[in-house]
Length: 254
Image (tube, rainbow, N blue to C red; front, side, top):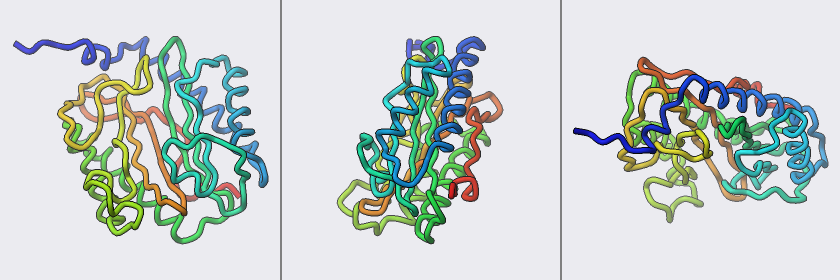
């Protein structure tokens, strides 16, 4: 007889829990729209972070899921970048990773933009990340629930294209290609919750849980791209809970 563990029970969301999580996400989307409109050449990362925090307070969700990540230009290659006085320049990659909470239930979203027309390499990296996400989501839509298979689907695609990236040659097979974190994680009353999309993960994704799918490519000295959405896992497929558009056209701001 299988014993159901506490983390497995927590992972499956009730309608009320899901409603709180979605409300938190909708507030984050309002903040994202506002903050994108506030960008201008010369503004600093830290000034944008302060605007993000004030905006969450304005919208009634001051308890954030995690400190906002704002990264301009080459800083976007640092997965855990701490915003500083770096100024926005034309041609920069712009990464926002934000989330808040409603009644203790968290949201998590990343969008990457370009401040001005992206060059060919920026376009390629963006489209490759988007494709990696689409491949993983397609597996989920078809009913695959083994976490390591979902992770592998996106990771193999990225590694194949970026395995010769100088910044990744000394890394393990799992982190080559400039993709050095798990593909995603559960979201609930904490921002990183069971289960996890990771290489060798034994987790089986249950229906009713909310997962992020967030592939990324990070090229030191150049910049990075991450696209992160939350998905409700259903018995027959998945439902995307993240609404902001993410086509290449939508990612070009100026």
